[in-house]
Every structure is written in structure tokens, then in C-alpha cells.
Image (cartoon, rainbow, N blue to C red; front, side, top):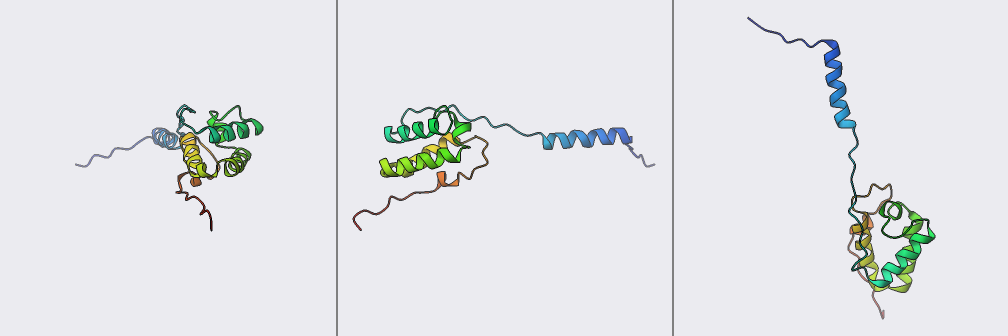
Amino acid sequence: MRTTLALSPLLAISAFAFALNIRMTPTTTTAAPVSTVGIPHCILKCAEVAAKSTGCSDITNAPCVCNSMPFLNSSEVCIVSKCPELHGQAHAILGTICAGVPTTLDLSFTTETVFPAPTGV
């Protein structure tokens, strides 16, 4: 004797919709609160000026600064000109600030190893 379990079409559609909803429901990632403690003064100053000049309230506004190419460009120019020895550290700090922040920008440079430019060559 063979028993067959048949789902009603409505139940099958409901089960499919439920499974689809689980897969399509976006997950939200919450960024950790940003602290400026321990950020070298020169990097902090460049980042604060860049944030304000590009419409972000300050460097702790991670969703704004991590999605603003003008902020990235402005802070980069400042850091390279005023404290080039901290350039690699600035990238690492930005990577930490932007960790967990949804962004459409390519921030892969924040995890690259940056070597200082040779001097006296």
C-alpha cells in the first residue's frame, strides 16, 4: 500500500512564497559606533575638514563618509600633502570606520598594504 501526500495548490504557493521571502528579505548590517580616540591628529583634522566640506556632519557619520567620493578624495589629498607618513594608517582607519556600512563605493584599498614612498632616491 502506497500513501501519497499531495499539497493543495494554495498551500504549495504559500510555502514557496514564504521560502522566497526568507531568501529575499535584506539583512541589515549595523556599523559599530565610530570613536575618534587614537586617530592621529593630522588624519583626524584632514578627515574632519573633508567631512564638513562634502556635506557630512563629521567623520563619525560613517554612512555619509563611506559613501562620499568627494570625502574620500578630499581627505586623501590632505593626508598625502600634510602627513604622508600616515597614509597607510589612514586607509586602515577608514576601513575600520566603514566596516559594516553598506556602500556602493569600492573601498578595497582600505585593506591593502601600503608601503611608504622611498625618500632620497
